[in-house]
Image 1 (cartoon, rainbow, N blue to C red):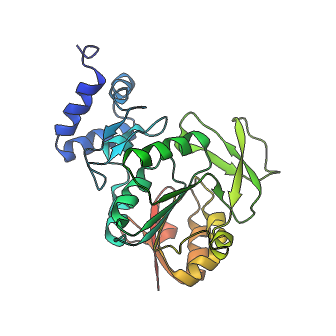
Image 2 (image 1 turned 90 degrees about the vertical axis):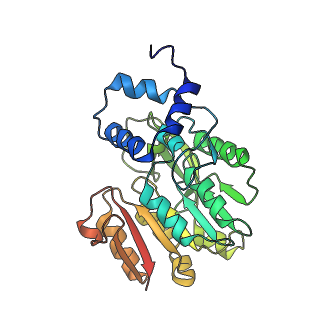
Length: 277
């Protein structure tokens, strides 16, 4: 019976389900509590397919998750981060999406800052960058600039180590310890330098999700943060101490996005909110 129930029918049914129920299924899958066969069957209706997001701040936007997280297509990924963008981005704002992946937060940000705003997305993985361009074009957005590069204080090139899921690629500087994963060489850029050259608009909100390179990203935009004081939402990757110290030194109050507790006591993979004093 399930084999006869195709991808388009699956998407239609999920779009009609109440958000709490879909959220429950998503959470069960994230925690490994759904049978593998069921999760794979459900994902086939979403991967590499253009579709309309049914839930969340991005509801109604067109999106294709490519080879990344299929749950982007449901609109339920990281609802707290979505809420931050909705609260702080207004028409005319400028949004930086650093570690943009296939553009889920890019297209949400592009909707929220229109008319008159700008989105600058930074993504070094070539497959992700291609998917991001596709998702931007699907929605007809012309105010998004894609930088196919990693943000780093060192500039030059670095090795991007790849995984089966394109959302989990990690950046390492030349000379780092060898890794068994395949890698590609990618370009690195520093936000401070691009802004000084007049190639970027000053940010109002910055989202960072860079699989452990958060401290280096903050170094690459320290002058920008000191001068323009954007709101920052950042996913940690066991970088609590370093991220907290750097942001406090730059004059930010930093808390766990989920409950407002100190960043040092947050989970290793928590999202944190940094607000200028």
